[in-house]
Length: 241
Ligand code: 1GP
Image 1 (spheres, rainbow, N blue to C red):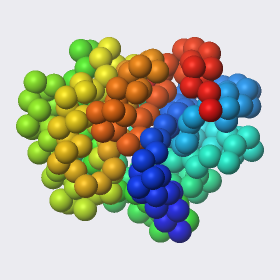
Image 2: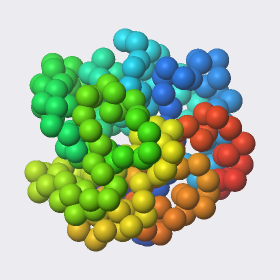
Image 3: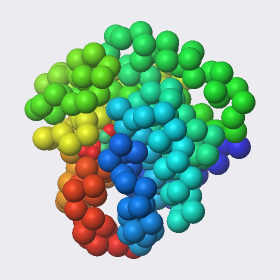
Image 4: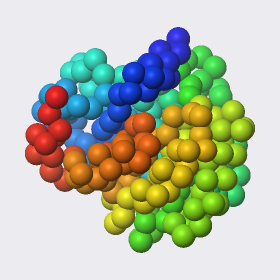
């Protein structure tokens, strides 16, 4: 039942680094899926995340069903809203936006999700989601009406991530935002990592193999990349198995 999270822990204990390819249902035409997933399968990617800030109802489910035809990689929902929860995926990042103070994204949407989750087999992974400023406003900021944490205030970021762990969250996700101008600074990744005993996810604005490796070397256990693959699928060629 807890296969996705346990597999993440197992991989980390073996010193492996994980890569999630983020697919936004709003940006991926169904007819593109098979070619795109073929590239994913040939790459070092270990997970597929599916989610977006603004996605029409049922779009996520249709996409997940289609992706599953083409890959055995675990499909993890990374939802912007309750409507993106589908039983067809393997797991759900049950995100609390702990960098902000909007109650909708701290608890209200979670309560709304329960009626769907009660009758589902999805593995639910409580995740502390920490938005960090990147140089421009991101959709997460707009949609959630929260402010990101300042990159200058490292202690605040560390304390926020640690509070998530102490609240019982199983993952912390440091997010610069989709298409971020600047990824999460390496110093922030390494300082947060030193404080945590749970796995650390890092995403937003990572566009090169060098940036990916730097994030891993700083302590990221799992890196999420979306935009760089959306914009240029040849990036997968640099990340072949
Ligand atoms: C966004 O962290 C993810 O939520 C991935 O960001 O699209 O910039 O790779 P990019």
